[in-house]
Amino acid sequence: MSKTILVIGTFDTKDAELGYLIGKIKGQGGNVLAMDVSVLGDTAQPIDITKHEVAASAGETIDSLIALGEEGEAFEKMSAGAAATTLRLYKEGRIDGMICLGGTMGTDLALDCAQALPIGVPKYIVSTVAGSPLICAERMAADVQFILWAGGLYGLNPLCKSSLSQAAGAVLGAAEAVEPPAFDRPVIGMTSLGSSCLKYMKRLHPELSKRGYDVAVFHTTGMGGMAFERLAADGAFACVMDFSLQELVNVLHASLVSAGADRLTGAGRSGTPQMVAPGASDILDLAGWQEIPARFTDRPFHQHNRLIKNVAFNAGERAVLADAIVERLAGAAGPTEYFLPLHGIEEWDKPGEPAHDPEGLAAFIAASKSAASGRVQMTELHCHINDTAFCDAVLAKLDAWVAEGIVPSGVRA
Image (cartoon, rainbow, N blue to C red; front, side, top):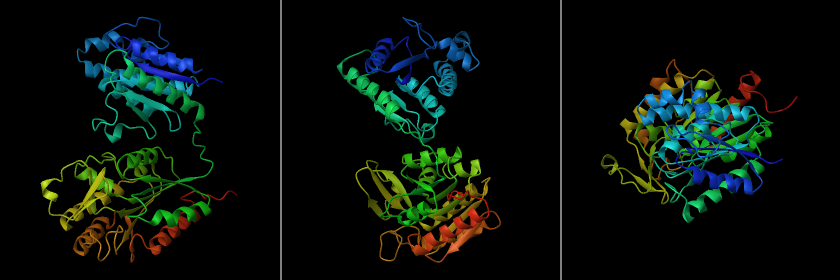
């Protein structure tokens, strides 16, 4: 059966571009539902879902939006209507994926539409600002796909057609090929920075699999943490093992490498049982092309690759971080266990390694104990986070939570 793609855009100003995209999707055997999200202009041809229907989904009329006299405010309300309409169409079984074209206005709206759909539903945004720091982590759906719209601001041209034709193939192909998550087994959401810095995932993954769990490991370099938080907040995980927290460091110090301001809160909001450890929280991530801020130029420095680099924190900064971690965990609605490895929190935090800082670690540990007292269940571990003893403690806690009925068993009866 042919898949149906929801094509979203301002048909008053981008009729030619949207028409070309629709033609390419239909030319490959796909079906299309077209949704107009323009406000001021009218379309040149009939549209499946009109701007009036979209406005009504937000409790507005086009006339009331025009009367606002402010383009940004009007389009924000259209975004709410478009997102609600997108979700309704999906729930009614009328669409198998979505694609939206736009500049900043269209991209802003497209982000809301993408967030409205569950993971596994293809969601594509063809944007003149794809990959831009203008798009913050909080706005991103966990599995959204971006295509940079080269030469696509106004009117069709060979460059524009190249991007749009690829986009048509991408969204229709994704709708035909996608294997939505079945969740046949309970899923454990885990974070890690990488196997050279944090090694526990290599030990934990096979043990968790033996216990009947699927394990989803998220790379904590901004977008990975964003997806992790969004899914944790949605209750997608049976248990969370959030052992890599340098994205929280990045948030507190305004790094571009950000998972969003709600890092370390998703599982707490949904009541998902969570185990947490401060892995790699002694370093700040910076974009590889960024100049190192003056206040960090006297610190140990590591150029990981051309995309990302790191600087270390001092004792005072790590004490402040300890308070921030506990503050977020204290607000959790579900069971929370905070593991504190006393001998180091990442591979370079060992004697002889560049980030080894006993004074800083001691300040962090002292501040963590003080902040956690009476607020968060903390387990001190006399080991390094990359030691086998850390994994043993995690597995013991999971087994205890399963026995107590806190976490569902991965073994079918």
